[in-house]
Length: 390
Image 1 (cartoon, helix red, strand yellow):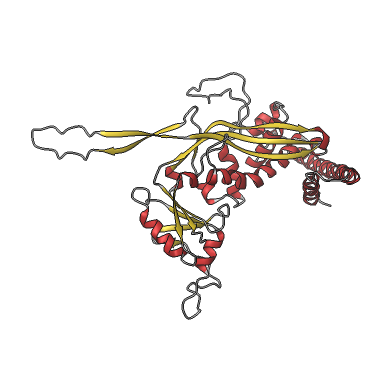
Image 2 (tube, helix red, strand yellow):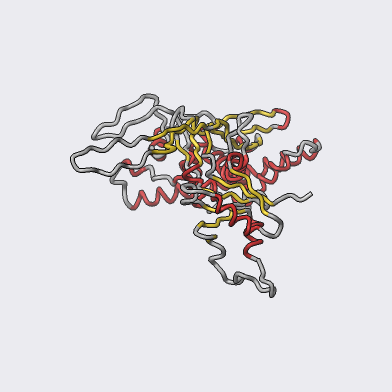
């Protein structure tokens, strides 16, 4: 078995261990199988490591390094994150070599604050942290980031739980010869946000804890990326803003309904109710079944309205608003609005990793979470659902 096959089997075993009705003999069998797989994995990694060392030694014999700093090769963003998460999860500090490899792109391990100067960068003393945008970048690379999640702009302003905004202003006065103009008067209001936790829970068996920091971090990051897109979207779309949950877009949107078989009529009516300036830059986010029902619509003769073969463009616009499919929307649902402009999400506490031990199951839950304040402008979004007939 190769590494990918072993990792896939370990994930399968981990999922099986979640079964609370698992018999003792089955538990022992799965545990022994995990140990064997981990031994195979360790042997493969050691073999790969030795091959890498041999290759490096071979290159050193051909040409010595001209610069000592080149001994540590730059790490990719994903490799940096794997190492940092593995260290963070185990409360371990980075070595000097690891600090040089990781750099300061999105982390710091400094204990002392250093002010920036004209000849050197400053250093903060916040400790290791993980920016939300880093995880989003990796999901974008994998083309797995939800359109709604992609359009939410996360800020990181400490303590900010309300946004001031200009609700109205006087029109500018015309300039008259020899006379000054009056100052424009503006009315300001505040958008109060709702604070809550966005989190991911990753169960880890004791066998996985034997991995190196890098491999353990790689496992946690892979699980985080799998769960983040679905779990965070569920809260950011449907969160009710109670019990330490954030406020989602659907909770603050204006609700509307469409009749069975008349989804396009419902979308058109909803778009018309979206007033300026909220309509500018808005998108129509649809569930997969909604997109299919529109795309596969037939005319009275039974012909498809859109070419269904070799049509790479699909349905891109309704009126002048882009149409995008978000798999995290429930069947039959549509959200219309400019998410990036009118929905606010501010990170109050950066992502942290905590543990919750279940000794009887030999499982430790790793909880990756961050504390956010979210909210949106009243009237900026339409939440469209199918009308329920009794």
